[in-house]
Length: 269
Image (cartoon, rainbow, N blue to C red):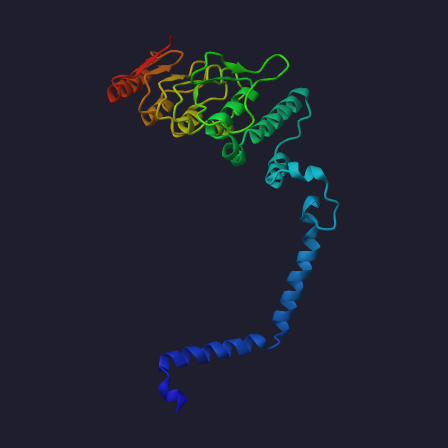
């Protein structure tokens, strides 16, 4: 009687499910042997697990500085010929220091939530050798010879950042996220920042600077291709570059930008 009241398709599905479940519950010698072999292989290959990830190993405080992609770095290193020359060791050390510095420049949400975007950006720039100026102040704030500087350590209402100079700084792509959402910023300079390229300019142009009027790119490695993203800065009036008439590609890109924004001028002085 119960079978007649159930849809035939539903009854067939239920019957198939119960049949396969009963089959799984049966002890299959071959399946059990395969499972045991897999478990044995897992135990035998356990030596591949890094020491820092093994629960029985001592966990040092320096584990915080361990790299999550250390395995890929090791594989890449093993695929290269061994070079212990002084120049190779120096290059490795330089790359290692650059990686650490780039990691230290990563965006810290808690800092911006505590200080506000303007003051947090000021701390980031001044601490690394740059200088800033706030609205209503004539004095530029920068680090002195003893690496001290005067900036508030708590949120200050109505503290508006107007000018930022990152000249000669060791600034990485990761650090540019700390200079963002500065609604009243009018002047921004990256003069002689050796690592500032087209990718960096693309990030800056998308960081919401609605009031930015002057952008200094002299001494950077920005190409004419990077200038195409400047359309995102609606208030931009002056862009400083090393040689605006370097070649036909530069001239064409600058002409297109000035056609899009008649108030924009790209020059080297």
